[in-house]
Length: 415
Image (cartoon, rainbow, N blue to C red; front, top):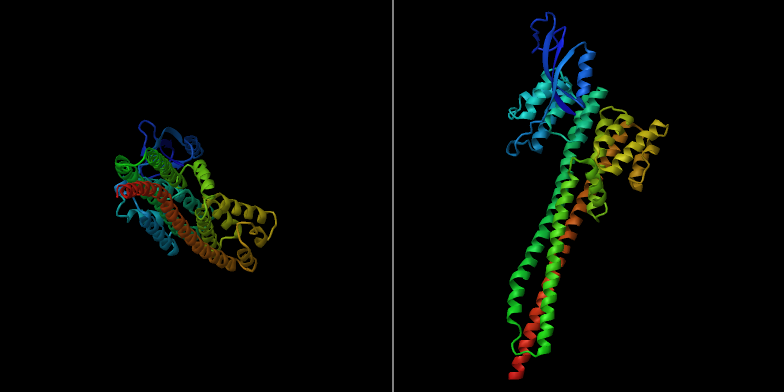
């Protein structure tokens, strides 16, 4: 979606900012901010309402500076405020406008853009997109509520999804962050050996040793240099790869993110953590929709669009299609993504509310599994980095041992 400022003439007053066009009585000039996929959609909409478009210009989103950016808790409070307002009987658009007007940071550009869309009569979905706050999965949940008229349930589902996704992202950032720092400390240790200890050892050498012993010592020093240089180069490559994969996992570029996620799924422990987090997040969304009275087809449709993880998205798309083709919900949810105990639990439900409870229970179990897998990955990375730098240390210690043994042999000969 893109924001556009459109100016058009209309034979009636449609917005408060309309003014009568000079020289053309009965026509009113309007200038409003709207959100649309293409500028041609805006023009078509104006003409369909009997207006004459005069100009249209795309508006680049005004993102707030980093030091003024809204954090996760701010976004969560915004969703929570809208949930409370809608539960008290307020419309979603009025709830959003009220929350933004009460926002202490409403001087920020995106907030003003969203308020402009609301005040110009724009819809809830267009206004939320103008905020530039939420990812596509959260927006998909909110827009589904606007489409189906179940905004209360969609807002609650979006809030739970946002909280679950934030927890999953935090675990993912932690896993990738620890990997980065473990590799960084490993390369620092190896660099210390390469540029401080080894030159000191090589410069002294075993005094009075035989030619053969000196050649052997020199070969070992060169081998230690080669091992250290190789490990430094490999570690730098791994650090760069970790940064690229971490950035790719959170990238808004979907094709690139999908390729990164396919690679990460093959990483032991980390792949399981990502899958468990994705299952937990999508099942939480589906459970929230079902608890709110949304039918299974609507809940599965929202859950499929709310997930960025390809296997989970495919799971819900398949379930939606199966129910549409006459399958029971139990059969529709039967897929390799669920293990035997989870499939048994799903098959035991008899009502929609029970299914919501089952999905919530599976989500909690997957949360625990994700946390366990994340910890396992952290432990593996820690010991791998220790072993990694330990190889360089062992080669260096071997050179020191050769130097000392040669010196001790010389002392015995002299003695």
